[in-house]
Image 1 (spheres, rainbow, N blue to C red):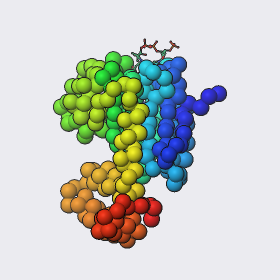
Image 2: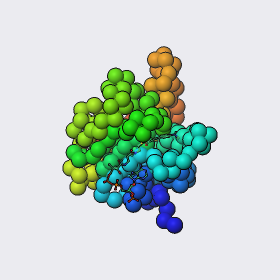
Image 3: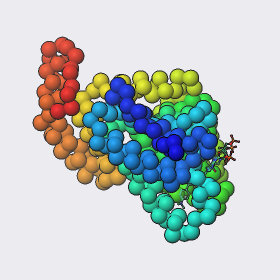
Image 4: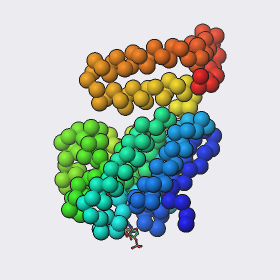
Amino acid sequence: MNKTVLLDVKDHIGYITINRPEALNALSSQVLKDLNDVLETVEQSDAIRVVILTGAGEKSFVAGADIKEMDTMTPTEAFEYMTYANDTFSRLEHLRQPTIAAINGYALGGGMELALSTDIRLGHEKILLGFPEVTLGIIPGFAGTQRMSRLIGVSKAKELIFTARNIKGAEALELGIINRLVEAENLLEEAENLAKAIMKNAPLAVEKAKHVISVGVELPLQNAIRLETEAEALLFSTEDKVEGMRAFVEKRKAVFTRK
Ligand code: DAK
């Protein structure tokens, strides 16, 4: 059987592709399991500095949780499926490497929620995003109610979830769901350019910035500021901090080593 999630590594970019184009990359339990395995590999890889996540084929990023599989689930199975998926999405969210979703088509329900678990999202005009769950008699079950509310605000998230309205790229940009709207044919290249811009910088500093932002937004402000202060102090012990500042003084380009 073909792998439902692919990992390719090139020039320090880890490309994760959800690979079930015949089902528009719907998230079956096999996909979630394969994604979990891939994330474990990424976590342990020194070669991967940035992750780009996309969907196989021309039409779809991910068209949601697998409805055919959910159809026969008991409440207990649904609970287990959802818990496993949420653990997997949290694992993605908290990868030490920055993550970019290259949204290449439908990002519906669980697909939208998967994209929300990345750091930065790019899309094109024709992508279609939305939460169809209430049309199926359920609610977003992979933390969409929570991550979307935190990203765009409670009221706008409620409107999207209550109406199940699909939105295209321009509106997704306006709402702040995607960071940038790019030409469809340039989507991957733009994601790579973004990855390269990130990779020019000190890796440990970028990783710490990600951690402090992701964890800090959940904390009371004073605790979050303290987290930032401690992370900053720790970075003062790195070789890359010495190199970065020395390179500035010596008017040359810094060469970082993630040490
Ligand atoms: N699940 C399973 N198969 C799917 C699928 C999905 N989400 N989306 C598409 N497919 C399959 C289609 O069934 C079709 O398969 P065959 O009939 O060829 O075997 C194939 O992909 C191509 O789809 P279409 O023929 O429908 O393609 P179109 O271009 O005409 O339409 C579409 C594209 C995206 C508009 C349409 O496929 C569609 O509406 N798909 C469903 C979108 C959707 O409602 N997604 C689910 C969102 S709900 C929970 C945890 C999480 C969640 C819920 C509960 N707990 C554990 C309780 C999250 C739920 C969701 O994500």
